[in-house]
Length: 101
Image 1: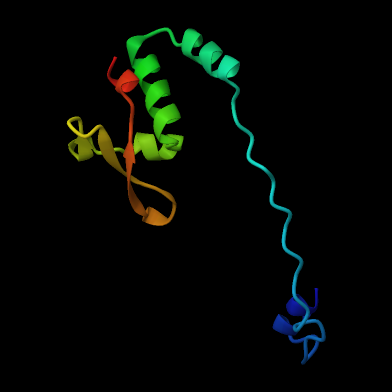
Image 2 (image 1 turned 90 degrees about the vertical axis):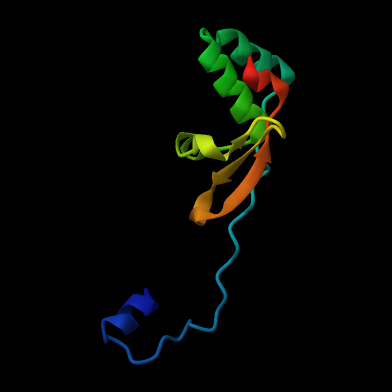
């Protein structure tokens, strides 16, 4: 509130500017059990769905990263691909043989 009041010229000095904000609590990431993974595999109906699931599971890529993949960046010999993640950061990820069903 004081920051806004200072920006709007209601006060000349922000009395709380030296106070550090508390860090948000970091949560432990949730993960899938082996049983849940098998249920997802069984739910895939087409070969494409199976390959897509295996690719996302083995690489940890986000949906947006998969959508923006360039087919020329896929290296089948090394089973790797270059993906563009958050902040346009480029990284190489590796996929398993189940992706090429």
